Length: 92
Image (cartoon, rainbow, N blue to C red; front, side):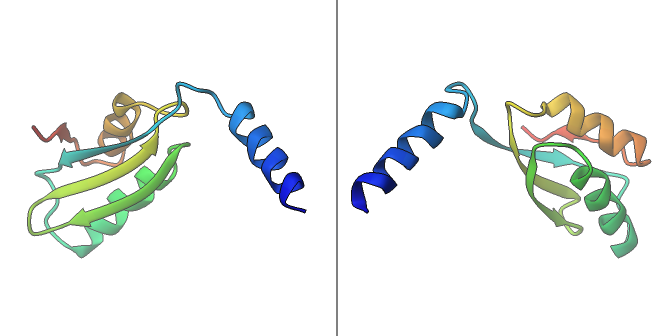
């Protein structure tokens, strides 16, 4: 049984692209004013393929986004917030 699990783990590792990595970026979203803005922003980012986690902080006007960089880019995240009516920039 142990050998089978090891083989399956090896196959899973080999099937994933070696260059894929999980990235995290903080977006500054100055247009957020209320809880509804936060929800709208989160829904827009969730529609982007590869997004794994989103934490929106209304007080700081920021969104912390974790994503698979083999499936999406920071530019796609910025476009998603812009298209939702909340232009954003990458927080330094």
